[in-house]
Image (cartoon, rainbow, N blue to C red; front, side, top):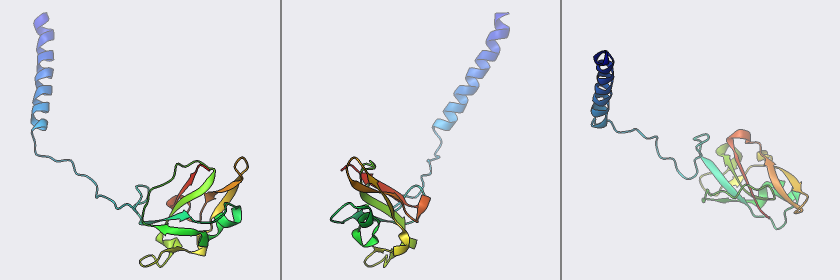
Length: 139
């Protein structure tokens, strides 16, 4: 009776060992996706342009003004706390002069809200929608 139980178990273990042995030593490297540049997001694979808020005050009107945002090649984002505007990333559709001196187009339509506890504005949305990135920060 024990021979009837042991034989299938030994066969299963031998099959498993054979499978592991043949796959462990094959030359089948894992294929990695292309490395993306720092201005490309994992979200869309589209080239993104990063702008930081460069206004002198954090009013809703100033934060919504595209001329108060300055292009940076550094694609690092802020901590994400909705207290004051910090950085946004948008695709080329919303950028003038993308190859020379990138600036935001007025069609970027930045929408801001006031954080009542800090009296500073932060970005709520842009016309880029899901294809863009909003990154606010602590005051």
